[in-house]
Length: 498
Image 1 (cartoon, rainbow, N blue to C red):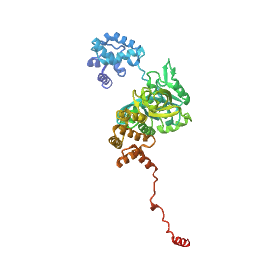
Image 2 (tube, one colour):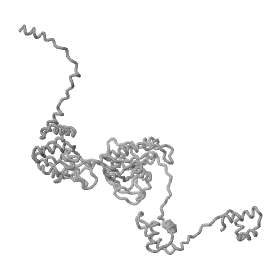
Image 3 (cartoon, one colour):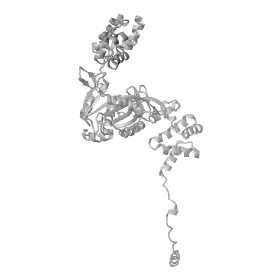
Image 4 (tube, rainbow, N blue to C red):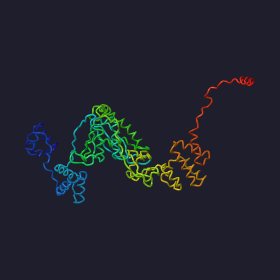
């Protein structure tokens, strides 16, 4: 095959200097047939091989073929890659060839077996207000000074590209339902079709093809909101690539730097502002900015239900000897008088309410880990009054002490010094009971006054508390106009008549 410089020399010698084919053949050493081909057409370059020879790899092709055929019976995510095959050949068979040849051969065999990934995609242009994609992601946040792994829900309109992101402590079904309802409220309506993974909170079993057995509670939720659920093929998250991209985008942009707050709700308020502000740019392939498309698609959404879906779970639980009820492997306290009784529990996505005969006796923040205790110290005060020596080692009191102002610690110490420890603790418990019926700020103010006045009895604190609440506010006399002086001479006349 002629090199380009040789091709140029032959054509120049013949066309410019009028040399004959024989003369050119003598000076270049090429045959006359080769020279004629160069004069009759363009430089063709190197022709591709009809068959790629693998002098070193050829000894191992049967082994590679066997591995790749066996892979067809294995899960897609646990099949041989070209690099893994190369590593095994080197380690197990003493292969000395190059990794690039292994990659070429593996690609050819996978194409023949039909297991090569299809990298072609169709350009799509979804209609406004018809579909939204849903997914979950994981991120780290700092709550009350501690690093916590949280789940964040993502919903993205396929038509406009408007995103919605919200944090939750878990991916349980109640959190899933709450996230969907918050997303509907954000968009101002319900998309007729939602696209999901095969998440267990919605799908009980994946059947052949597109068929799914859905969770009964999800069917009820879906029927209430009247949207259609469409599920991706297993292992095919790219079928909802828009929201897959949103998960990474939200983590890198909305959650960097790592948010720090006292609660997830504070971070969610920040995320809501971020989602509302997103939309000034134009997505590639669109003719309008995100916000302009979002404004148009709102009219295509289904209306929100007039009555929100009751996202609650009703349970029965028996109060154990620790005056707690167990729900989802976590304990929640109730008043000690209810030990041994069966109570009704209403579980919401963030709160737990416990009822006895229709009356709410306890309300707690919901826990989603395992073996956590939510203890209200007020539930144990009557029992502690009977057993004052257990006061300092009581778990609910120890947790409560961490939040006390210094005046409460000083009052407890004064009570114990003024009386013996038992009576001092009992008197202090009576002060703690004042928090049941009075605002914490007012009780703490009365405690501070009691310390200043040298009070060492619970009755004194109670008196100061009620005195502060009942004392009328007297306006200064300067605010009122002065009356004219009275004429007292009439009294002298009256005395004379008597």
